[in-house]
Image (tube, rainbow, N blue to C red):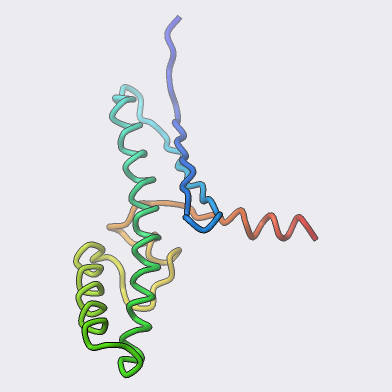
Amino acid sequence: MELTYKSIEYSKVFNLGNYENEKIGIIAEVAPGADMLQAINKIKDDVEAVHNYKRDLSEFNRMKLILDRPLEYLGRDVEKAKQKIQEFFEKYPFHYDGASFKDALKLEQAPSVEVTDHKDKWDEDRY
């Protein structure tokens, strides 16, 4: 009996460090004859990339706050914020200023991902 795979799913739960977890998953359609191991490794990498982007986006937003109010911070903190923002744009060239997480993931160079926040859905179902 020969098995044929039409789609694969991979998800991972990430600890956010503040007593919260985040589950990110991808379901991918697989072309006939495709290397399944290679496909699984690709979606694993994409899940990690989405998590890393979200983490880095949070830090980017914190650094923007420092640059918005430079008189409230030490000079070295302002310079560090400038450096971190520059590094962010070098790492994520598809990100544009003011892009939300969902908007950024819809751009060409970003991983193609549908974002569903189950926390919001849970709140809707709860009440």
